[in-house]
Length: 154
Image 1 (tube, helix red, strand yellow):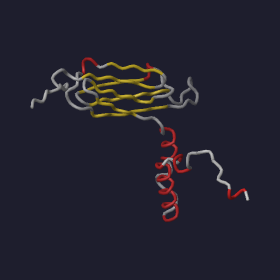
Image 2 (cartoon, helix red, strand yellow; image 1 turned 90 degrees about the vertical axis):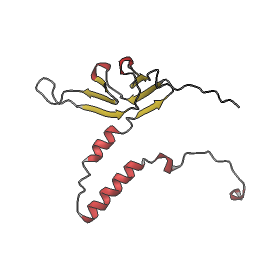
Image 3 (cartoon, one colour; image 1 turned 180 degrees about the horizontal axis):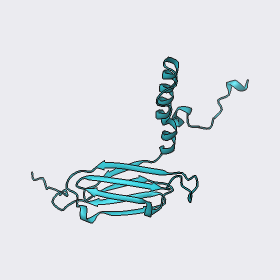
Image 4 (cartoon, helix red, strand yellow; image 1 turned 180 degrees about the vertical axis):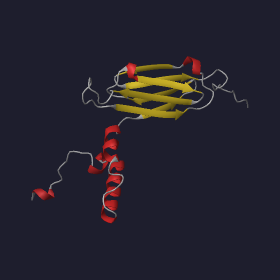
């Protein structure tokens, strides 16, 4: 009898929305290779993939500047290097020195990303700030390349 009464259910996110598609592709390749050829040559990449997952880079273009935001959790501002050469922006962060008698067994974390930015940027006025694990780089456009509004006459 209670099966006939329409009950309101809580809306829960579906299981499919919580699945990482890249992890699924990696697992499918591993399964395919292991069935046919034995252990997959890509099996060693799964640890690397999971350690770098979630570190995103976002580029936003505006009329007067380009804003690059990179997620670098756990780094210090002194461990981050940002270089802009022509239109190539390089972001590199390195933490730890590895194994040695004075450090013991220490984990090394390394992040590097190279981005090609659009032309017409003023490389002399680049500003970078690092706060709460997010690196924000603002590169202004030169006055010649900034857009301007053109009036349409009828």
